[in-house]
Length: 161
Image 1 (cartoon, rainbow, N blue to C red):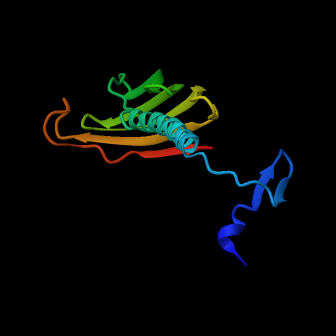
Image 2: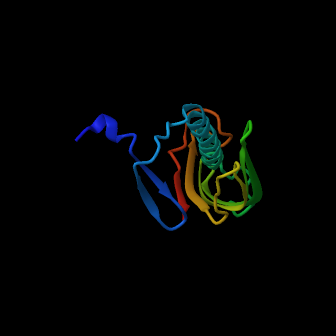
């Protein structure tokens, strides 16, 4: 069999439901310029989505309660907006609640829940709005005013599908 000559005799085609193999058809050369352009557009869109997700995780690593009431309890409600630009950009808005307890003047623990409300993705991509991110935190400081040595172990993050 002549493999060099066979490349120009066959081609694949498809529609919504079927794939076709055409025999003795004209050879269609790959359009390198459009192929590279398509890959670059997709790579840029994916990078934007990944950057937006990383920004959300970075924000979650900073969730904490700083002001406690007379019962050493803290409840904080807020929002988050993450944006990854330039174009094509992805952004995300979320609502969050942070709960904390301070069993001693030097130590506090807590949990947070971050619910995505709205997602905007670059053209040609889609993301869901139903992802819940939650986690736990603990923080210790040598002094009650948070001076001196301190420790904040890596937080536990979980993203629910």
